[in-house]
Length: 277
Image (cartoon, rainbow, N blue to C red):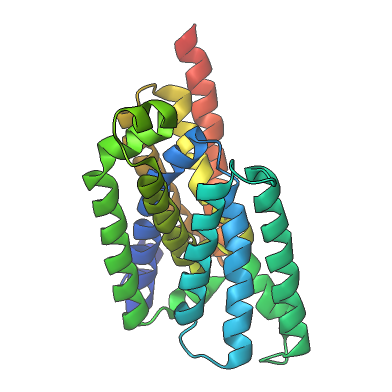
């Protein structure tokens, strides 16, 4: 405990924990919607798109890769969520195609135009996350705070509409809800969350941050509101525990957080089985 308190006095650690909690909270809210809409795999696909965009930003020498990464990820999210069931290529196939293409394209660019002498290390850091979360600047911290607050505000403000679109798009459309508009809102918020989570858990592990808390909450709770609240609580707790363990023990940040999420899922699974008896 004394060692932990010493670490918490460092501004870098404080910034990392704030970012971790905000990203975990934001991702858990949309996670419930994406799982129920059977679009949970979109987090994985968009994370690979963000990886490819980051490679482009690195090659072009941009110091602020958000200029490229965020717009590209948002555009791909809108295309996937709005046209997934209305095209000749179905949603899951489209996600898989874009995911693999972006990942391959990004890795190819990083090898053809390396920005450092350790390409493998850069790729591993981007894919799995690293202790670079401790190097977050004040500008990145405030950007994360603003985007996270906007994400939570959008979810709360459009809660009823998101609820309707999540469960039955046809009924929502017949009731006068602009389904396409709210699907676009969900897509944009999802893209923002994916980009925010890149530094925390890496490209390959973002899906776990979105899916695990929602699935864990669904094992114990039944209503949409209770599942959403429980998912947020679980996500924040797991992210905090994962970050603290990673900082103190020197383990990879992303992998540690996902391990915490997976452990809680197992506990919730067992709890759900017991409650049904």
